[in-house]
Amino acid sequence: MDKVYKALSDATRRKVLELLRERDMTAGEIASHFSLTKPTLSRHFAVLRQADLVQDTKNGRSITYSLNASALENALLALMEDYHFVWTPPGDIASVARELVESLVREDFAAVAQDFDSEMAAALAPEKLKEAWDLTTGQFGPFVKQIDTRIERYWKFTAVIVTCEFARSKLDIKVTFSRSGKISGFWILKTE
Image (cartoon, rainbow, N blue to C red):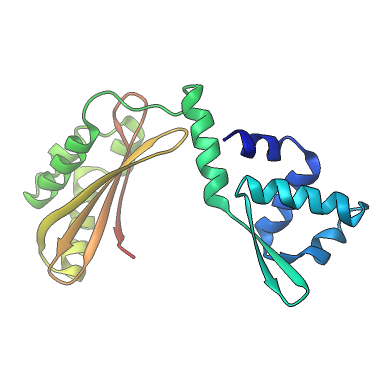
């Protein structure tokens, strides 16, 4: 991670990353945004490559750079974890999410909503949950089984994704949890 933090400590390198966020660019295209010598800019590219923040592809005499966003995300997440900006809600949220799915299958929509925070409870009352579930099973067929559960952590929330098999498709049921452990988000998404 130190290499990433070193790379991010320089304004020129941050500007290069900002440019690459928009699209892949050749070294010459990137250089046109700076009044730096080629050797100086090459040193900046080397630091970014060593930190795995950019990837380069050679095509003849031209080098095209692309942003490696996952390296940046991993470094930022590690930093947030080190300083406790990323948190884990209390309790076994994976079990809560799996039980939420079971409650949907039983069509016990009041049980699903009981763990909602106040905003979710207002936005997705049991009757709206029923409508969403009916639309889902109408489009993708009856629920078959839960396949997998994974947890994704973000700065302000933690999500549990329960991958489920329906008669005609696999769907992810994504449940986000607030710091209090209450459910603050709920989505049914088609898997990729």
